[in-house]
Image (cartoon, rainbow, N blue to C red; front, side, top):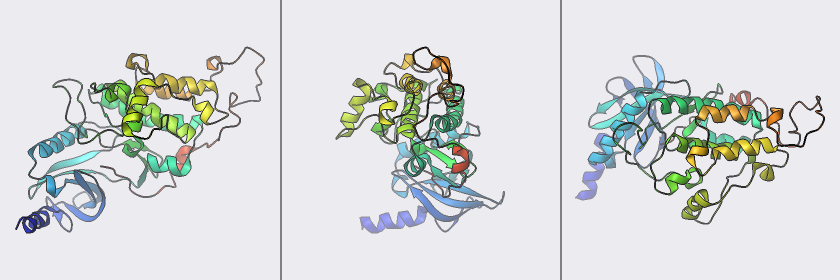
Length: 328
């Protein structure tokens, strides 16, 4: 009798083909993960498309999962910034907790990098500027994202980049110590201190953002190994290969920018995500280039960056992307 009961419970709590809280019409499922399902919906009151995230039916009896879902929703709703996905509403309907978010025609940055990369430093700087602005907003309010990966950055058709999953098992800086997590951070983007089991800090997010920039520039990740544990250990113990060796033509000034973001010691990284973005934007500032003194060729407008790909206008390229990339 257990299996039929489970099926009946799932049927009762599934929000598909219904209207949530008499306001949000559910149209179709667009994504799912270990703890939640995301639906494309429509706000009948405001007459606009929305994304509705609901706790999975299997977790409705899990008190810890319900409490974490509510904390995450409350935490994310407290952050308002053009580069953070906006949480419009949250609550519970027919026993199922839900979160309503703005809907974006977008792709996750992971798909952008896979299909469009590698990118030149100016394009990477443009993307970092947006993500860093959202991160700094969260950090200033005492919130650490803790899971900065290309899956948690959406790129809209307009070219706007937005952070998602703020509060997904995050650590809150100020009061009560670390929050619980719903799963491991992908090892390729984990900071050394997190790999060592230490609580994350805002600098941990900056490290992960440095890994994203490395991948955008080179089309590869800093470390590869046969197991997640070995990758995590590499973040702790091994220096990354200079991006200029992975992508010939990148100047050493870009290496220097990335290396500071990927410092093993958090205190040696950029003090803010915005500082990292500013440094990347200034990659071709000539006094910063590690080159022997000599005459400057004023015709070389790109500061020696001649051989690496020049994929200018990342925002314009992104504006052609379609699809909804919400991740859980």
